[in-house]
Each structure stands twice: as structure tokens, then as C-alpha cells.
Image (cartoon, rainbow, N blue to C red; front, side, top):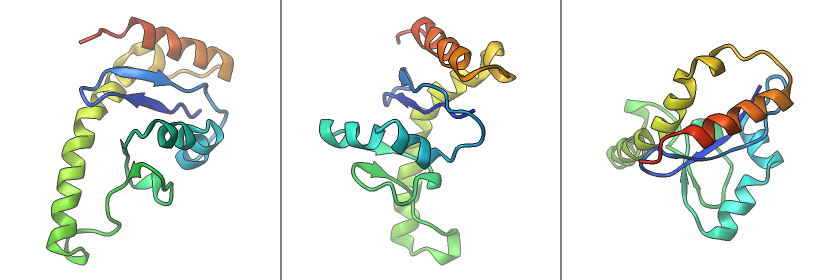
Length: 125
């Protein structure tokens, strides 16, 4: 299943999407939930991984390629991008460490409900 998550820069979970069945690419899931349009409308920038290449709008992705193929400026930009993303990854780590989400194998409706319950119970720091 695929659940898209939005969190703040401190890593606090803000929103979790309804679950989509089977193996759905992240970019397709984002488009299906119209997250890109909502972010653009609100003027919110979003830092993501390379799986969101081509998303456009306010979504920021790292440069494609590795070390020697990137210029020093691109490498520096990717390092800065990774530092920003590391803060947001805390919300995903919180979700993944919850035992009930580790091997969740049920309907998308139950997954959505469970994720929303986890979101509601996450500490507000």
C-alpha cells in the first residue's frame, strides 16, 4: 500500500493520505491525491527524494546522478537538500517504528483509519 505523508520541518506529522492499494509509485499517489495542487495553491515548498522527479510546482528534488557526475555546486545543493529532508524524515520514522504499521496487511480502508489514529496520537513537539 502507499500512504503519502506531510510533516513540518520539525518532523511533526501533519497529514497522512488515504491508503492506495498495491504498488503505486509515489508520484502517481501524490497526483491522485492532488497534493501538488494543494501545495502550489498554498505556496508551500516541499523537499522530497528523487522518486518525485518531474513533480514540478513547489516540490524540490535533489539533482540526478552521483558524486563525480555532479558539479561541486550541485553536490553542495544536494547536501543542503538532504539536511532539510533529514528533519522531515523524523515523522516517517515515527510512523514506521509503530508496531501496528510494520506489517499492516489489510484493506486500504483499515490502513487509512490506522494511519489517521497514529497521526492523532503523535506527540506535538
